[in-house]
Length: 326
Image (cartoon, rainbow, N blue to C red; front, side, top):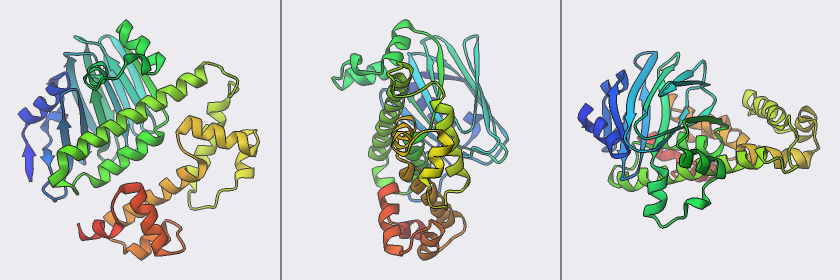
């Protein structure tokens, strides 16, 4: 395994504009290329963006303190959400978030950024750090195409933290965490591509939030809370067939409006969200319990193994049999 030293981890963060000042996250072994072996933590950094996958079963408190050498966005999804919370500090401003939140923090140049995450059974998280303006400029993209709220924050160099529904960002993050050891020969292309996907998902989420806040008549003031209740019902029992009529009653809206609202808030359909949850269950069964593909298919609620294999490959990019061989 090609294990990164602490200097390499510092260097990866430095390439995306963050100078390490302290915290125990620098003490874990980091891998830049997996060489086909199971790995815990992976760091990849390009010129203006980087991705950091943490799978650390060590302490219950994980900390990192940095100084921003550029204006950067730090976006993270904690994958082991039970009982997790994170306390953020940017300069003299403090924020906190629960594990179920996807967080986006804008850190202006020369500001200190620190986070302290508490989890019950080790930390599993995927974080993207990006100098969004440099990334857009380098690729010939106009900054005016960014979500308006983000553009105002960046141009005003305002310290900001937002919590968003993980949605598509969370799905991609889970896939990266599950597949991080499977493409050693294509590691650079793989992580670069996934970082672009995550940044795109973040921008889409911000655009959806902007549309909601614009008050365009599509949502009433309680929409997020009511759609959130529907999501919680699916989260508790993803194995149950969706009863859209019952869910619509919970949300106090008709079926069509619920479907539309759920997709705008979470970036996926009701059935797509449930399918993703079921495939996560199957993925855990394959990797952690050593289940057969046939058993994993039943665990995910698929009537046939072939349909499960198709859905699994569509979600994770590989056939489930490869997970067993690894």
